[in-house]
Length: 421
Ligand code: LLP
Image (cartoon, rainbow, N blue to C red; front, side, top):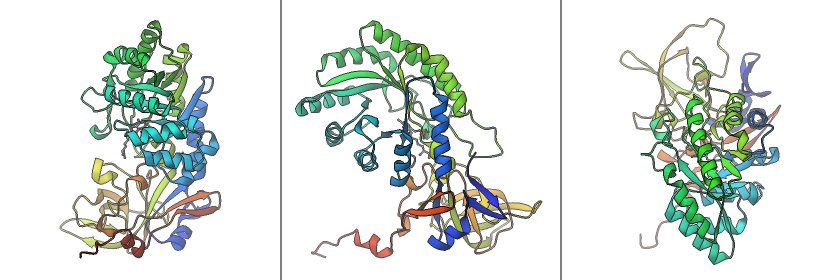
């Protein structure tokens, strides 16, 4: 459930007509709902009730400071994958002991910053990283809390570009090698193992791959404990999928995911961490765009909108589906016909939808791409010198611009021309 519904024939974000936001900020723009973000966080929190747990929002899905500040106020932790994300977490007020650092290529500088600024744990992904972190912790005279991200060799049955838990993927340490790695950590004075981490992929629509991975993690927990390691925390990653297409069967709910986690892992008595991104932010945001032209091609109608692949890259990059809805509610039973919905960028890949059944479109109409709150704004670029589009946050009947559209002058001023030219 989300909070983008028609009221009096106009699509609203909570109680704000999307047309009002368009009039105030211009198109295209992203708009997020505080109520939906809050609801999704709470669904996970309730799903894990009864187990000691921390929900670490994967800010790679949406790292706007306002969204992070909301998450912090709800009691969330946060999962970061770069020095930039770490800086955002601190700026949003997360305490160090609520920040988890993931990622396959953490640099010396990133390690140093997090060790000095405070960190809940580093999720280690390789032996070279483990040795480097030990060295930096020793230089700073601190002990780094770590987990090892294990690769359980499980097929997440998701898009190949976002599956991470197969042995051929670059992520984690093969689970069979984990006992050796924990044995080495025990000899390194700069590191203290606190748990095990696993993340097998994103947009999973079935609980079974999670279950298989978590069973392997449960077995490993017992093995490592028997070898004398103090495993107190299990980080189960993110990855629970969302319904991008309303017409399709809905993926499992957080409550079902939570029940599975409890069934597989509760008896170990570990603190459970999860790192959801998409499920919290995805359906909490839409991208609103205006139709520039409707153009007839050879047997095809093209709707050319003012948003493009640089604003929302998921369709071009993963052939992802985003539901498209008109901002003005069509009359009941209004006829639909197939359209290709495309952006203005000079690439064929700049296509949001092919042969999508929509009601009649005209220049100046506003349409919205749904489920755009995760991996939308964060993956945007200024390709074609198209300014990053504004982000707006709604709460009840109020809205605020939480990132303004830069001017062309601001964009140009970021470059500098050497004086030999
Ligand atoms: N934890 C780790 C270590 C991750 O790598 C990811 C996502 C997450 C948590 C959050 O996963 P989520 O709950 O959001 O599925 N750009 C792609 C998605 C890439 C996901 C990368 N890792 C997309 O637009 O579909």
